[in-house]
Length: 370
Image (cartoon, rainbow, N blue to C red; front, side):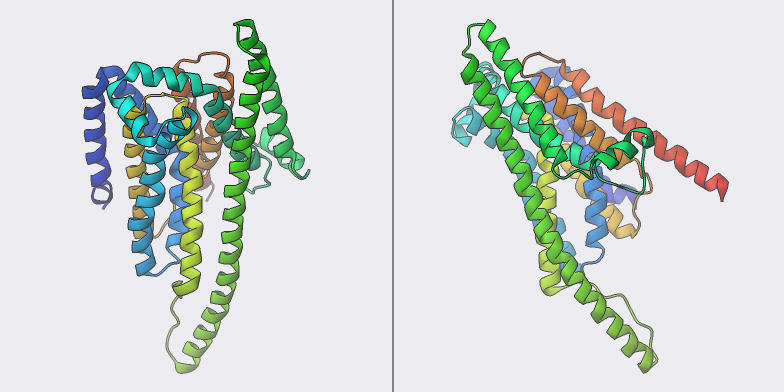
């Protein structure tokens, strides 16, 4: 069952790694592998959430999400969006950005390097908001309780995450501006670039979060009506002397659930794409690595839905969000300083690995206590 579900992911992995070696040697293979692990680790909780919602939908809408939805939200965002980011920041058409990446890597790298401050500020703010909203939220399961308990109490202050993000952005903008001025740049222009890009990242996060909240509220309203209908159906079944069966969502409820999942998928894949810029600016390696990761996310979602159970490694979501927080700081630091790509990638891998091991130890302790 496991091999059957992941056979396409394994095939894409082999092809992607081979393409990386052919494209730019063994160093490229390492970068593609790190990007794949990063994408899988950042999107693991997305697959779990998707599976938990998909199992409530009828067979038709499950097929729609796992085919049309995956193509749009996963492959579209992870493979097309990096091109769009570079095209917008470097003021090129998407086709020109792709052509330049394939035919003149030095010139492409130069354009990306020039646009890096705005990319880093935009992505750093978006990722930081994801991290802050996670750690400031009260939750039953805590990984690093000594840190998460006081942060959850602080999170009761309205708009605290936005305030902290803006303070970090101001510090980053002024620091970068001073550095640029020392090297002959214009202090005001550079600071303004970082500020505008950072605010744009903050606005993007709030828009995506607002849309997700809107669809989630509609989804909850529909679920309440479906639950009432399910209770009535069970009572009718009992009176008729036959067992009741769970109701699978269809029609309007399933449609709003599908829209909600699309917005949710877009937000998760967006942080993966932004995080990838902390690893490499090479759009070909980025597409290969994120494409491999996207296939594993799809396979994992299908596997969890078909099995009907969710993974019990409860700290992985925490590890993924701490990795997001680390990447946000790294992106902001790279506005002024260069950080080795391998080190950047390993930070996320180490955090995910630590959260996985903590989950394993927790499960063992629970089994021995029972």
